[in-house]
Image (cartoon, rainbow, N blue to C red; front, side, top):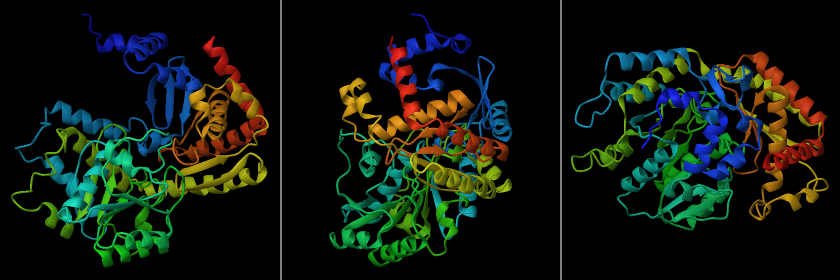
Length: 470
């Protein structure tokens, strides 16, 4: 037996890392990620919106960590909070001891959220928060209702329960999940009414993303107000999934908070809650609902003991600092400043390249660039594609996005990504600490890449992929 220590791990070159990935993690993941320039390089360190590679180059990371990095990489205040926790030898596990960190974090969320959203639970991942919220709604109705509604474009996670609540799964394989899941059309109140009417008195929860990070669509104020009124009439627990969009990303602290009278019964949050360093999520429950569901001696531990790492000390301490930074540094205003650059810039690009850009949609510091291209240059390439990928209905869109991403990274040192669900837009989602000159540089790079023509980019991408295979 030979174990690798931390120093040896950090000294590994890329070939050694990929070898271990292929043997112990997933060989196909290596093949997939090396399709891109960033899959063929190693990061030495990260700070703010920048990745410093081992070869000395600096890359601008405008992925926003897929929602995790509102604070950027290694925010100094976040690092200091974690250092202080470790140096003082604070306690992590507190199942039978009361945690000041858990108490303070719960208080802070109640302070910044509207209405009586004031009872919090803190598991590890967004998918766990979703499942905890749905479980709470089911318990609120004492198991007497059996239907949960989700939008046809929903993405809520990849566990068995949250995966079933995810409509846009992007693949043909279906796992077993919780029973009673029914659909409605996103941002269509008549569709919701029909779904509720089809299950009279039997809907216990309705789950919605006020802003969808998969499709870049957003619910109108009228829809959310109508949803709130309908759920009140039918005593349906209204759950908002703001796992991606929370903590300022779209220009308000949470997306729903830009509107009056649309407070949910349960709010799910994660990603940026951990400040880019902590694996923590939360769901926050309105007072009356929480008390009916769990506030009795028999059920008091039914939710909090559902996960070993619930409310871990250092995770909560990190989240306390992350929330304070978001409020003190006015992250919603930072997102609006980024939007003031991105929105007109992307609109100008869409008008300049009508054959390449089908649409741009977004809010705050989260925008999608929807590429398009006729089949004339893609069809011949399909002969080179393995059967499994060729059967993917979204393959052409993914191919366009992949070719575009490669050019942005290799030619301009800008790191973006595309969504694996919905229409697969290229996502521009800068950390909220990103200098505005980097946002301007990104727009100039997008124009330069599109000027090359998508056909040329795809041929370049495929040629490079084929050469890597040999």
